[in-house]
Each structure stands twice: as C-alpha cells, then as structure tokens.
Image (tube, rainbow, N blue to C red; front, side, top):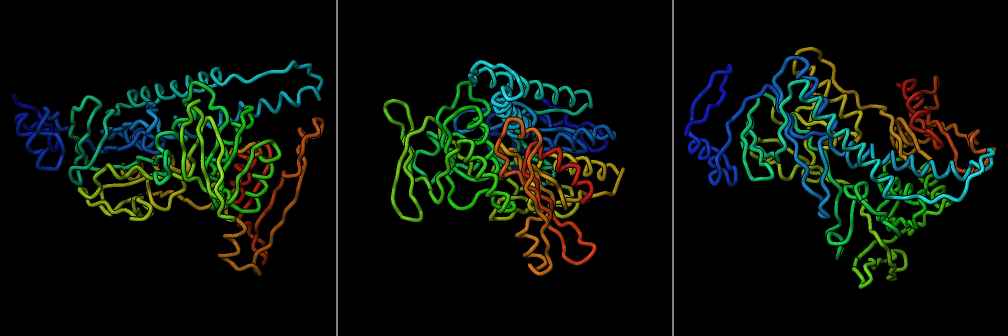
Length: 484
C-alpha cells in the first residue's frame, strides 16, 4: 500500500508504508518498524510543546500566514495525574495556584468581616467544592486553547515527540501510533516538571508535587511541604489559609534568588498565620503506616540528630527540571547545558542549529515566567515571518510570589545590586506601612514593607523595587513600567 507524502513546494511524493517504516527505523525511531508509519507532513513551523510560549508562537505564526503544527503530550506524574493542552501555567501552575490563593484570601476576609459589621456564622472550607470549581475552569481553558488552534488553522497533535534529525521529529500517540513530521523551522517549548528527590527512600511512592496538588479530589489534610522555593511557599500559604495543618521543611534559605530581607519577612508573616517551619532540616525517608499516614524521618543539619513526624501528605517542592531528556536533542545537534539540562540559546532564541529555537522555561538563562514565554514566542514568530526584528528584552521583568502576604519585585535584589555595583555605590530607601484594609480589622501589618534599591550617585537610578503586601502583583506592574 502506498502513502502520499507532501514534499518541497507542496508536491506529493509516493512511498510504500513499508519503506516509510524502514526509513523511520534507520533514523533511529524506536518501534517504527513494528507499526504502520504515518504519512510525513511538512510545515513551515513545528512547535514542540503546548504551553503558553509554544501556543503563542504557533498562533502568531499561523495568523501571519505560515503553515503551523503543535505537538504536545503530558506524561502522567508518578502519581498518575495528567491534564490537557495549555502547559504548566494553565494546568498545574499560575492559574490553579492563584485561584486557590484567592480561596485562602477569602477565608481571611471572612475573619475580618465581623469588624465591618457582617454577622457571620462559623464557616468551614470544603476542598472538594473548591477543587471541582478550579479544575472545571482549567478544563475550560484546555478546550479554549484547542478551539483557538483550530480557528487559526494550526494542526494539533497529541503525541510525544522526539527528534529524528534536524528537520524531522517522530511523535508517538497513547496507542503507540507513530507520526513523522518535518518542518523548515522548529521551536522547542516543552517547559519543565517538578524534581523528585529520588535519593530519599519513599519519595516517588508516597510524595506528590505541584503536578498533583491542584488535581486532588480530596483535601490533602496535614501536609509537609519540602522545599523553600516560591512554589513551596505559595502552596504552603494557601494550604494554611484553607485551615490545614501545614509544615515547611527548609534545608538552607527561603526564596533563593530573591531579596533575602523580603524573603525573611514573607516567612515571618506565614509563621504568624500558622504555618510551621522546620529550618536546617532535610528528609531521609518516607514510610506509609498501617493507618495510611506517612511517617517522615529527617535530619537536623545543625545538631546531626534524627527526628520524625506523621503527615497525611508530603509535597515535594525542591525545584524543577527542563523537559529535554526525551527529545533526542543529540539527533538534531542541539546543545544543552550539561548541568542544568537546559537548551543553550542566543538573544534571538536560536539554538546551536540555526533553524531550531527554544523559548520559555526550557531555555538557558530565561526567567521561568509565563508572560516572558508568551512575548518571546510572539516576537520569534514575527521574526520568522519577516514582520519584525525585535527581540525579547529580559531585563527588569516584574514578578510576584503569591504567598499569603504577596511579594512583588522588579529589578535587582539588594544582594545583586551590591555584588554588581559595590556596597558603597548602593542606597536603599525603605519603609513599613499599614494597608488601610488592615486597620479596622486590626490585622498585624508588621511585615508590610517596601524598599527601593538605587544607585547612590545622581540621578539615583532605581535598580530594584520590592513590595510586600496585599495586591503586590498589581502594585508592582505599575512601578515596573516606570523602572523600564
């Protein structure tokens, strides 16, 4: 039986299915000889990864007249969690995180309400109701992305892709069917996934990550969050806010890479709201007890003593790793940083191969932020279509940590400013303040704080701005424009 393959200029070439399978096998595609190879399709642009950056790039290129395809496949987490199109932000990141953060903030507002004259009976939070509402919203976004791709004539393949050569990838569907796709330009936008501490006994079997927490049908109950990243503190913050017994285990410092004075204020506020912190500790073992609880053993790094506790859930939040290992990048000649496993790119998002690009979390030296990935994807598509020569500016990108007291920042931390310019050339302006909404309810505002890190010499250029308080994301966005 013959297969029609679209060649250069849109002309069709004919090849037997057996020949196609043999060619795929020769290219190193595992299993191609065992199943009928699908027809090879050529595109102007092929995007690997259906997250925010990849989708933005694909839709922009299609709108500018290019023939575009997107391949995306979610490998289930070790606990079996899977989700739809849209990537980390939509499914297991920004969107469900901020909605659950909002749920926790509402709990605080309910506590404040009597001070403002509202007679409120004691209320309890129902995890199942919240989770169902959040998950339904996420599913609607999944569907919306598929509709947008269809509207823009972008071909979507739900397949796991790897490179055959520098212009061709092979995608494998859930049923094992293989599809060969080739393109003039290829964009890698596969993002990252949470890192599991596999050296810890029981970590894989009994722990969950941010890939799972937002899709739990039932409350996680008493939870140990291991790690001090923004993911760890955000999750611990909303869990405490929802009334759950929550402990954070920190090996070294919280919010590494952020301003450390602000980080200390963040954890102080969380502690005042009921989150417990185990500092200078690292877990060594997780075991399931006969009653279903998880017994965690850890070491106090200062004293060297061992301790243990029982929890319903253990959440690993010890960093993320890029999704590059299964891409067979060596087949395409794409270089990575061997330490971070991220793809090396230049200012144009170009990899070591001139027609292959990488954007978003998978690229070396890029902030792991959805808006930057989206803008980088759009600008890349415009350059590829000859519509613009603009490149993404990654300097002074604002970001917010959605802890119970939100932390927004833009520019350099005090530590970075001192390292770059010298302590004698840096001036810091700072102030505590009390948000008006805290006054009537007499809420503690001792951690509400703002500081500007400036160059000392006139005109005292603002190097960094840091804000800790309600609605930090909205506040920081406005100041970011001024700093830009």
